[in-house]
Image 1 (cartoon, one colour):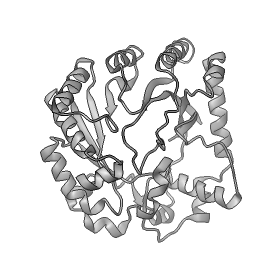
Image 2 (image 1 turned 45 degrees about the vertical axis):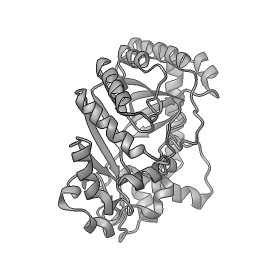
Image 3 (image 1 turned 180 degrees about the horizontal axis):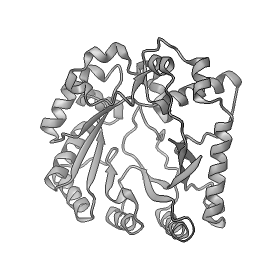
Image 4 (image 1 turned 60 degrees about the horizontal axis):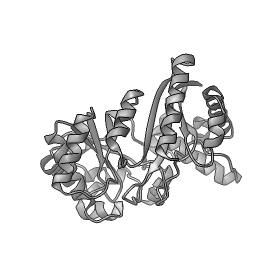
Amino acid sequence: MTTESILLQNLCVPCACRCRYCLLSWDGRPVGIPWDRGARFASRFRQWLLENRPELRFQFAFGYAMEHPELREALRFLRRIGSPQAEFLQCDGLRMRGGAECAALARLLAEEGVKHLNFTFYGLPDYHDRFAGRPGDFSLMLRLMRAAEEAGLAVSAGVPLTAESAPQADALIGLLREDGACDRISLFVPHEEGRGAALRSIRFSEDELGLLSPDALALLNRRLYRPEGEWVREKDFAPETRRTLLLSLRPDNIDRYESMTPGELIAEAEALDEAYYAAFPTLPELAERYGDPAGRRFYRQRDLFYHYRRLFAADRGLEIYDVTDERQTGSRRF
């Protein structure tokens, strides 16, 4: 297993939404540390990598949302240390803004070198607002998209595809293209990580394919997202040989992390990754045990592996540090 990159994150900024589907299981309480302390740590970590492990890609990111109180300064810092988040922002969960404020934000982002904004739409306006847990969220994101387009920024939209959102997909795509000036739209099937487990009962399946027009279907990567039965029958699982390490700066670890060298932190995160995956059979073995050759629900390979690991852990009563919980230090294999 080859470590290719390091993602250092500080989840120090609140999110204004409370979505049913949230990778980070946002519960209203940030789990990060003060920004200044995290930025100092990131600077030291990056310098060590440049001197000792230059082959590793590095990025520093903050969350839960991009609503940093000193956003201009934060973007400048990200740009100085070469982090991709300086140019690409996920713009869900921002505070409410009127048209003029949206325009001002878009100008600030353009001035600071941001190139691309991405937004997540769960369905048509009323459904989206209920799903996101905030009235007016859909309209806010349309205002932000239009303001970004006027400021010369690229915008894109992701649409989580479920049994509930599928009947809305074509109308939503048309609305985003017309009212949001967005022609970069992709459909994806949500994973079960974080709060995604709550969507299991409405996971998109072959039963809903007929609800999508050919235009909408073209926005779903069918090589990546496939029915479970197809995965199980064809057994063409790609081996995972690389990984990204995620180091999350938290009040419960920052004192210890500051006392360690980056090399020690990297070795610790790699050991957590190895221990976690050693506790489970391989994906082909899990598919033999749990796979449904007639399964109609759509998964990515990574998500199917996660789904089967959950079943295995439940069967065995297995309790193990979860390296896939992106609120804490862990890893992402690919």
